[in-house]
Length: 254
Image (cartoon, rainbow, N blue to C red; front, side, top):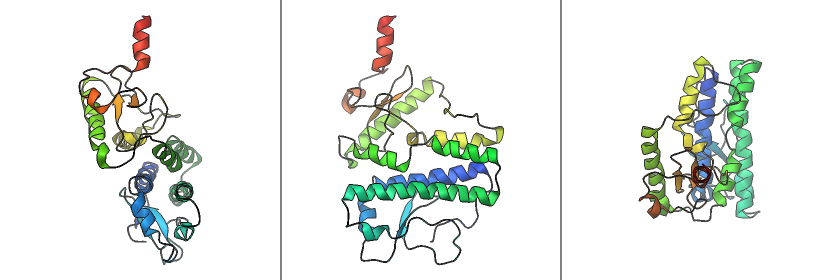
């Protein structure tokens, strides 16, 4: 499979970065690029796999020819069952297999590095702190609005409010079960750069999907679906300091 790295990651934080990038590519494939993936998974073609690549893109391709393969291969032949089940069930099936493949690749690299018990636990904890691809897919599918390009302005408002908010407030660190070691600061910085992958709505606790309209509370710094707090993109443009319902109630009680 072209595009797979020739050299394996050299340390745990590189394994996690590789996991995050492949994960981002697969989420894109099964949400915003779903139609392209569906069309490429033609049952008339030979066995195909869905790959998440380490540059945050995806590819539908036949498996590698070399034996043994450089890294574990994704589930083979996902295209053969495409037309034998409802579209959403097929999509969920691919997501589940993609989640399994990502963990297999990460722990394969860990085995190559011969990481110890503590590093394995930490790698699993960092992975487990993220929503699965299937969870991200379900969140995306349950949104009341369609997922077309009409939501670009919404994502721009989310980004611009994040920029203004970060200028006035100190960013909160990512919550982890065990504190990062000194040499793992790069992992935390990478997670901060990809915060949209980790963000959960403060109201419904669903994961953020690119293109949705979200708004950030300037008091507690939590993000919310606009629909969950009854704020539209047009209304958000006229709000200088947004306070979520929870923070508003606290102020009333005080």
